[in-house]
Image 1 (spheres, rainbow, N blue to C red):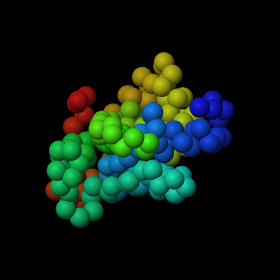
Image 2 (cartoon, rainbow, N blue to C red; image 1 turned 90 degrees about the vertical axis):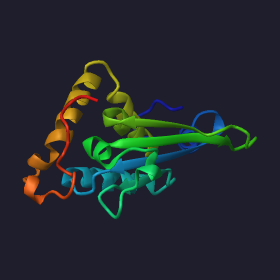
Image 3 (cartoon, rainbow, N blue to C red; image 1 turned 30 degrees about the vertical axis):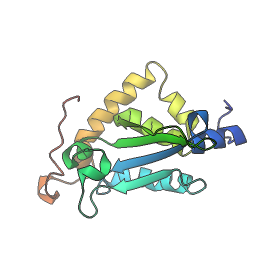
Image 4 (cartoon, one colour; image 1 turned 90 degrees about the horizontal axis):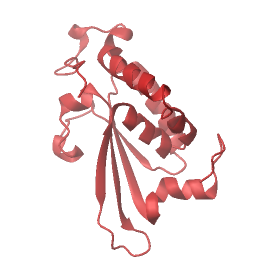
Length: 169
C-alpha cells in the first residue's frame, strides 16, 4: 500500500474495495442526519465514496429505525455515537471464506470511514500518539454537545434524539 499522501494507487484501491486478503468488504456508517455538522462531513464522505461506492451511509433519523437491520445497535446507542459496521467475507477467488463483521464506534469508526473513502492519510494521522487521545476526547465531547453547538435545544429534538449520554461506553 502506498504511504504517499493524497494518492490512490491501484494496490490501495484494491485494498479499499476488497479489504484484507482479497475478501469482499462492506462498510455501513450509521449517522445522525439531523446534526448539521455531521451532515456536512457525511456529504463530503459521500462525494469521496462515489468512485468505488464502498460505503453505505445510513441516516438513522430518516424513516423507522430498526436495530435488527444494524446488528442490534439501538437508536439510542446510534444517537450517542457514530457506528461503523464492517463486513469482510466471501473471498473473491474461492467464495469460501465466511463473513466476519466488526462494529467500530466513535473516533475508531471515523477512522474506518475515512480509510474506506480513501482518506487513509487522515486515518493514520488520527492514530498517532497524542493526536489519538486528543481526537478521542474531542469526539466524546462533540457527540454530547453537537446539538448545543448548532443552536438547537431539547425542545427541538424528537423522541430519544437528545438523550445522549456523556459517559464513556
